[in-house]
Amino acid sequence: MVNTALPLFSDGIHITEKELLACQSLAKALPEKRSKAKASLAGHRASLIKGRGMEFAEVRHYQSGDDVRTIDWRVTARTGKAHTKLFVEERERPVLILLDLSSSLYFGSSLMLQSVQAAHLATTLGWSAIMHGDRLGALIATEQEHIELKPRSRQQGILQVIAAIKKLHQNQLQSIEQPPEPQHMVKACQRLRRLAKPGSLIWIISDGSHLNSSCLATLSDLKRHCDIGAFLVTDPLRQGKLTLPKHFQLPVKEGGKEQLLDRHSYEKWLISQHQLQNSFIEMMQKLNVQTRMIDSGIRLNQQLEALR
Image (cartoon, rainbow, N blue to C red):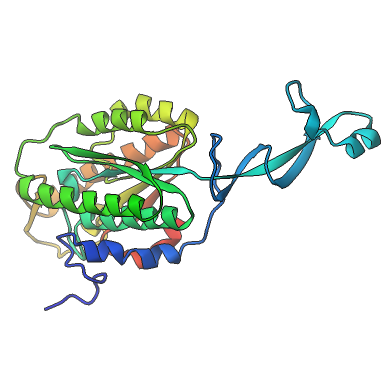
């Protein structure tokens, strides 16, 4: 029987090309944002960087090194001090998605696996970037492998991301029993640093289990030249949102390991889950990056406010 609460074409466990293509409709529901580009790039989006361009922005005091051709002579004459004009430039921006598909995300207590929700989120952000004329790339990582995708424009950008997500998700479903590589997300961040050009917008999507303080130095380097946004994908059971009976025995499988939780062991397990999530949020705070929460127990179209 088909679960009508699920998104179109989704079974909550596997990833299909059709369901990721359908995420385009979610991206259309997102408002366009003007973002702060940090590099001189030609394209279609108006950045908040001030420089020479077609659209007037504001006037400020003339500074050493400013182009004398941009001096506003009327304001200069009126105030007696040299002023220069600033303009908003049109820029195409590279958008990169760091998608964590570690084995810990292959967990779901309600609607879908966290990995499936993470895939829907990544694709929706990708569609949004393409629709705004940006170039889209990604770094998708698991314990066993990773795929690096250089930013590309238009359909080429989003289609390469969809194909890579589908491939790695399927591979991970078949291999989550294998021993994990403990530093795989540290290495993924290092690869991302080589991939990201100054001025890029980077979206980090993870459950917070493997992006830890060891990643902080690399992400700090990226933050100096790029804008970063973060999403923490959670599950109702990991958040303590599910109503459970007073006495229960709950079989839980995560990362290839099985355990049977009763009320006491569940409370201890829940504390460990919150600690992992809070560590990720605190690391993002050190980077001055806001973390947005996405629940795998709720369809993404009901959580679009978190993407605004």
